[in-house]
Image (cartoon, rainbow, N blue to C red; front, side):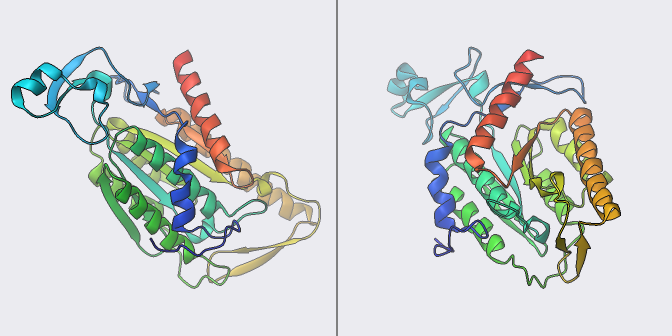
Length: 317
C-alpha cells in the first residue's frame, strides 16, 4: 500500500489510515430508493440490500453472497452452488465520487475538509463492500481524475484508498497547480458514463464551483440511480470571529481579509448563506439526500447519524 507513513494530524491522510476505517463502517445504514414514475420525487424507501420476498432469479454463488440464500436442491442437481435472488437482493454497484481539490484544503479545527471527505468516502466504501456489492469510484483533484472500476473485493477498496491518499498528499499551502473550474462537473460526467442505471452514487464534496451544469448532471444521475450527496463543510464561515485576519487562496493567488471590518464579515456571511440556500433548493428540487458533514467533528458518528436521519425521514413520507 502507498502513502503509509503520513501523520494522523488532520492535514493529510494515508492509505493505512483509510484502510483502518473498515471496522468503524460496519454499523452504517444506507437507504435505497423505491422506483417512482415521478421524475422529481424523492424516492428513498428501504435499507440497503435485505432479504426480500419477491423471487427474481437463480444464479451461481459469488463470494460475499449470503449463504442463507443458497438453493440446496438446485445446488445438488447442478453440482455447483446456486443462490436464489429476491427483489431487494439484486446487485447494485456503487460509485464514490471524492473531491480532493485545493478548495478542500481548509480546516479550522479537527481536520481539513479534504481529510474528512477521504474518511467519509472510505467509510461508505467499506460498508458497501460489507453488504456484498461492487464498489469503485472517481477521485478528482484540480489536475486529473483517478478511477477505480467497481469490483467486489478488498483490493478494489484499498486501490480506492490509494487514489484518495495520492491526491490528498499533493495538497499543500504552497499549492502550485491551477485549479480547474470544471473538475466537479468532469468527475460527474465520467460517473454518468458508467452509472447508467441501478447504481448507488455517493458524491463527497463541498460542491465548490457548482453551477447549472452540475445540477443537470445530478438530475441525470438521479433519474436512474440512487444518489447521496455528502456535503463537507467547515463551520468557520458560520461562526466568524469579530476580529483578526484570514488569508484565502485560490491556489496560486492569495488575499488577506480583515474580519474586523463589518463589510467583509457581511460579505463572507452572505456568501455562506446564499450557497447553503442554493444547495438546499437543489436537494428539494432533485429529491436527493444532501447530508452535511463537518470537518470540525469526528467523521464516523456524523455519517452514521446523517444516514439514520435520512432513512427515518424517507420512511415518514
